[in-house]
Every structure is written in structure tokens, then in C-alpha cells.
Length: 492
Image 1: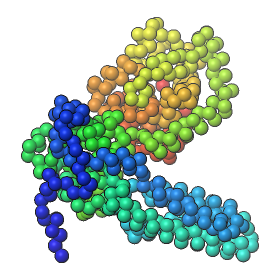
Image 2 (image 1 turned 180 degrees about the horizontal axis):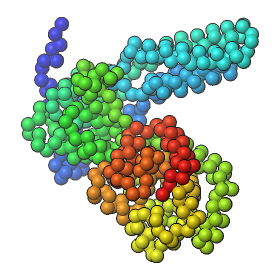
Image 3 (image 1 turned 90 degrees about the vertical axis):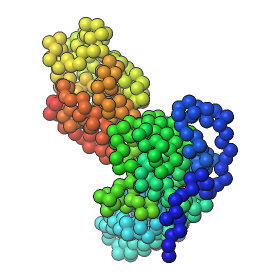
Image 4 (image 1 turned 180 degrees about the vertical axis):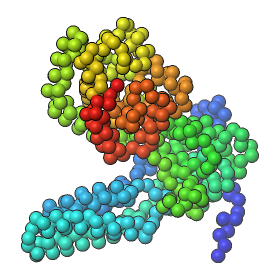
């Protein structure tokens, strides 16, 4: 049976769905957009401000994770004999589900697509807990009863997941849940994506317009709201939540720089993977394979998790290392006299300055030297104690207080002085993008050998890779490698 809508060219002047709100040219938003060169007639008729405000805070795990938890804890309503094993099963299962991506956002929602992964991870979690129960309890009746409870909870999880997925599809089709989406590019793939989003609301997205390079203005097959450089303004105008990259030739460096701006940093970014990425992508819009791009900045649950781990680590480290900190303070006093701490202006997240705290290893001639001298690794004014502390990075320990205050994070791009931030930002296009996240006590670039007099471009590349591929485990790996570097004396 032929799809009548597939062959027809979409009529972009007659949007379907909810009624179009009145957007006159006299509104403040339209006036500002006109001054910026944005075509409000290309986006305002398609944007759903009410729906965006109502659902922009919703995330995929908000319904599935609680239902999974209730299903896993359901056996406690019948008997509490195996409550320890039930709790262990619940915690382990949720962790394995989260690690396997079963709570991440998907454009194509299908219970059958998730069923193999769901069953495999349930079996893995149940096996681990059952082995532990068998080792701790010699009674065969206890193990058999517990295994029966595990089977019941696993069955309830599968039923609950089927319900949540069907409800999610219904909510999208009824437009109870939808997010405004801007497409980057105006080529054939972008046209197909726009048509699919307009025709099939079950993907949860409302196409509101597209942006493209200035060279394609006037020749594009889609209504262009502006150029790629104006993406952040289009996102603000349409209250957009999602950006879809439909142009494979789009400059990745330029796009990532735009997506790091405050207005676009909170958007979810999806990319059409094309022919070669179709096999590795497990999600799609229609027949177009898509993949979610890693967060361009740390926000939401990611930021809350990272901040909680920072506070926990800094508190424990300050208490555990207090004798070492006292010893370093006494050594600094003996080596250089009074004034054991050294305060210096550094640039933190979003370019905000703060005072970093270190143990003093030498005294600069004046503030100008402190701010503009690149390295003092071979400076003769550094005493033997100061040189040892710098080589072992013990002079950095007071920055645990900066972490506790919120100026810094445990892991992140290393903070630099304002003079060098301005200099390197002008010389290296990717350098300023490092400031999307809090600066860190240690970083991926530093444990990868990029310390001291090493290429700034390489440092920026490693720092941006860390930001775009952040995970709690990546932080753990960087910390473990930092400890190794400290014992090797690999400091400057």
C-alpha cells in the first residue's frame, strides 16, 4: 500500500497538530528577531510554546525507573522473609539497566526492541544475587523461595516496561509530551527528517524550523529561520529543547562551539548517522538512523551527580589528609617564611574568575610576573622543599577547599590565568569551549602527559573530549591515574 504522504512535498505553510498561536510582528520577540535577521515566519507558526513549557523538564527515566523499582520491590508486599535479597536485586538491576542505556531517551520507542536487552540484564542481576544468597544460606528451601520471588519481580518488570512504553507512545501521539526541535541543514536528509516529524508525532518532536549556512539561504528546500551562527537565537525564540543535525557536511568544530553557548547548551543533540553509521545506531526516525550526541555540557542529573561526588571526595580528603596538609604547611613555612598560602586569579566555568589556593613554592617579584610568567619549573628561586612539593603535586592540595566551595571540581580542565585564557582563546578556536564545565584539580589532559610546556591545542582537544564523553567512571579513571603520577613524581 502506497504511503500517500511520502511522495508529496510537505506544505510548510499549513502546519498540522495544535492550533497556531497568534504571533504578530509587533511582539517583542519578533522585533528582536527582526533586528537579528531571523525569519520569524519560518519558525513561529510551528513552535508550540505551551507544550514546550509543559514537557521540557520531562526525561525518559522519570516514568520507567519508578515503575521498575516498584516491580522489583513488589515481593515485599507478600513476604519480608527475603527483604535483603530483594533490595539487593532492586539496586543491582537499576544500576545494570542504567549502565545499559535502558533509561536513556529514544526517538523510536518499542518494547519488543528492548525485550532482549531487558531479559539479559534481568538474568545477569538475578544470577549475581542468587549466587550470593546460595553462598550465605545453606538451606535449599530459602534459596528456592528467594528464586521464586526474583522470578515474580522480573516478570513484573517486563510487564511494567511494556505498559510504560505503550503509554509513552500514546502520550506522544496525543501530543501530551512533545519537544520543539530545530534541524541543522536543509539537504535531502533534513527534508526527510522534517517531513517525518511533521507526519508522525510518536517521535515526540515538533519541527519548528531549520538553520543552515549563509550560502544556502534562498536555495533551501526547507523554511530557513536563520544561519547556523544564529542557532542560539532560534533556540531562544522557539523555546527549543532538541537540535537535530541533518547535514553530514556541517562543520563539527563550528557546531560544537555554537552548542556550547548558554542558550543551546541545555538542548539534547541528535545526529543523522548516514549510511556508514546505520548498523551501529540502535535508534531511528522513520528510516533515518540517528544517534544521541554526548552532552555538550554538564547539566541536570549529570551535574548533580558530579557535584555530589565532588563534595563527598573533598570532605573525606580534607579530613583524611589533614596531617599531611599540616606537614606541608610547616615545611612551606620553614622553606619560605610567613605566608604559606598562594592566592592567584584563575578563570572558572563560563569565564568567571576565582581565587585558587596553593601552597607557596616561591615569591614572584610582582603581580605582573605572577599573572604572565608561563612556567617556573626551572626557576632558581624555587627552594628544595617547594620543588619537591611541585613535583609531587602536594602544593595543589589546598584546592580541595576550592572544590568544597564550588569554585572547582575534582576532575575537569585545569584552570588558567586570565592573561593566558585570553591569549589562548584568540589563538585556538577550541580553547574557550573548555569553560563549559567547572575547572578541575586534575584533568584528562594532565594524566595523559600534557603538563608544563606542552601544545595548548592538544590540551584543549583532550579537555573537550572529557566534557563530551563524561561519566563517573571516567572521573574515577582520571583520579587513579593522577595518584599514579603523584607517586611517580611526574609533576612539573
